[in-house]
Image (tube, rainbow, N blue to C red; front, side, top):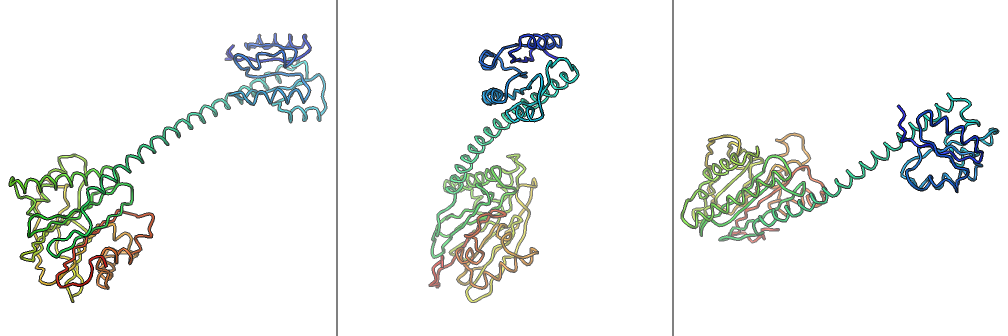
Length: 401
């Protein structure tokens, strides 16, 4: 059904031809406007734009009309008309900007006229739809860019917060120096680590890997830092000493993770070094790879132990393992992202390669990073975190060498 809002403009110096075509178009349900010349056709440039223009004009005049229509928001087709024309004439007006050509009187072949109008109206409709879709796409892209910009700003702010939660580098306590490295695969990291003095004789250190990536995993690292700070405060005030017991510490994390309802779990290695008795007490929450211990003049080896992940089960229990630190030692802890950058096929091969690197002299974060070319990697498959604990008693080497 043709709507009367569809406007057809006729430009023809022949008044009879204009009137005849107008009458036919009105009968067909169009709103027709007729003018003797382009200069008289104010409807071309003022008010609602026409849907089609019929014009009996020479090529140069067609060109001028087409040029003016280029500023229109919509495609407005021009149908060139003439009482007689050669093939060269038709080519000339088409090159000038006409979309079709009809011999006058245009209404003499009504089927041809109806076909031309229907075809051009459909073409104009499709063009308007394309413009609408293009505008909607541009608007959506603009909103997406704005959203991405805000998200990027949020991520940068979140990363700054995460970096500020980390402990100081090269912290020294009674001859033991602790350092760390963390390299997120995204802006925000799901890996976390911390270390600090519990009292004059004991130091706590842990490394954790939150399941997943991005903001939700990073939120859990904030929870870990907050929990650790609360438990340290409780210890100082004498309220409870959960943080002095590795298994109780993991149970507390487990409970708080389940309470969040985030569906996140954590793998973790947590150890307490008693510098007076020289004993490492530790517990393992499904963490891989296990830390590597290197005693002076002895081969490097993985610590023994295993345990359930944290945040999956209601009432899990963890075993506390102990290791006597009878000689100067180096302890290296990693998140599983370190295995992703080791070029080996199986987990066993990756762990063996890591152990060989440490045994070969890569005892520190700097030397291990250099051996694995971590500084040259612009994209990481997973977050990487490392903690080194170096006993400098009787060791002339710098911990960062």
